[in-house]
Length: 402
Ligand SMILES: [Fe+2]
Ligand SMILES: [Fe+2]
Image 1 (cartoon, protein in one colour):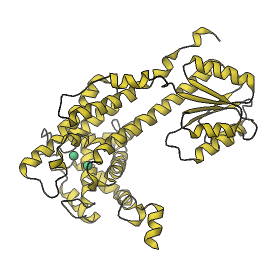
Image 2 (image 1 turned 180 degrees about the horizontal axis):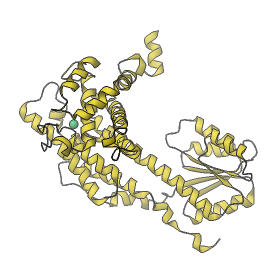
Image 3 (image 1 turned 135 degrees about the horizontal axis):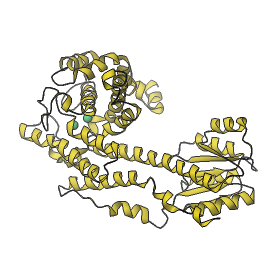
Image 4 (image 1 turned 135 degrees about the vertical axis):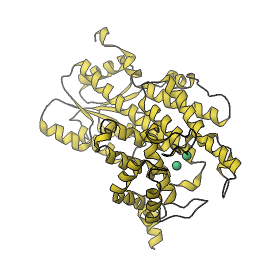
């Protein structure tokens, strides 16, 4: 193989997103300890310099010439490669969780490549496995069958090594995005784990945010801001709104009942702790839009449209749109679920409170969007209500019905 094809930079092309999140975890850990923000990039460095940190690729191919070409090429690209000849053996290896990508031939003994892919997709793996099918026929029938089986990409034999590299690079991007999304939500869940009262709050409120932003995306004045990417980023980052609570002492955060004025002042600090932590990460990774949005949400989700909110007393459209949307979603969920300091309100009562707050607490446009998509919002509330049969896991539902 030509030396010019070997470029291990492909392996780090998508690393920054994961480093950002890992570094942010480190920052939050520092915030919790009430020390200066930790910006130790070596934390991320450790991940990448670990001896077996190479991405595992499983090659499934009974044609030994093709298998050898694949293995040599992939090793040159810096992947950790294992070659097997049949689908059954491959399936057992995928079960170990050591392989994030599979490159599989079409015709093989025991199990075809499409069947192997189908079986992998049927299992609920904790991590996504990117599947590339090799085929010597560029027939539509094979592509359709492969797509139905859940294949992510196809490579027609004989293939160019550069094409193989490009396809796997795409796979890495997909896996990297999945890692980012999972880590963002894990980070948010970490905060929630300190406050068991809130149940599925994050899951519901991200849905409310998505619905509200989706509605606004159709309005002329928001069209240039709220596009598909904006909606996705809002969905991903809104669960981080209270991330700063990791820095609030337990005596305040976990206090049953109402907070005293002094305790409330401490609680309010969660906006600046979260916002400043994410701002520190943003300053080092200025092209990461999700960090910018997460920072804005953490800082501004308790600001009010009339300027009487906190921490800065921002008003009107000075408050970033993501903060104005999150404010409505967050309050609606707090109203319609039971909290230690209040009972659960009906949708009608919560609706009245949201409408009364239009122009004072909330952006009137966001409230208008809320009213237009009210039915979808109540459907989310109903289907994700952890106290209702609709949201029960099946075994619990059966037990309740027995
Ligand atoms: Fe908050
Ligand atoms: Fe919240």
